[in-house]
Image (tube, rainbow, N blue to C red; front, top):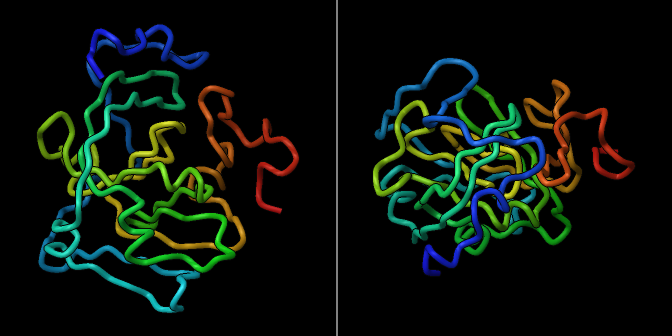
Length: 203
């Protein structure tokens, strides 16, 4: 798309959000060190073949990549507009390591046990990004790999990703257990669990 044809920022800004000066960085806990010799990416849970799969760093880095242009909406109400992310689409992982037919949810796991749950339809739109605006992602933004789920609030875009778990039954991730909304749609301002409608949270 020609940049001049893209929707203007004000029409892409969800309710309650604003565009800040600069590019704030927020994260929970310390920034982990990247050790390529021991780093791996696991796909586990309800896989179609019943097995756990692990990719070493050279194997993961060799997977096909795509570039997406996407806005980034933090639940604390700032939005970073027009980010160019490049990485491995979730569709590549789903083809290589398919889930069992009854899987409806995915838990994205990061370092230190951080996690975020998403529906499979949301996961299919995710990217496992390694570059931001033509440069490797910085350590505080999630190097070497972070999830990007651009249509949901940014806490679902887990930093320092180490794997995904296919789930038949939904369960809450790290911030969802601490009062954040189970789905996290910024256009519906789904910020907190008390806003959940019937069927939006785990049964």
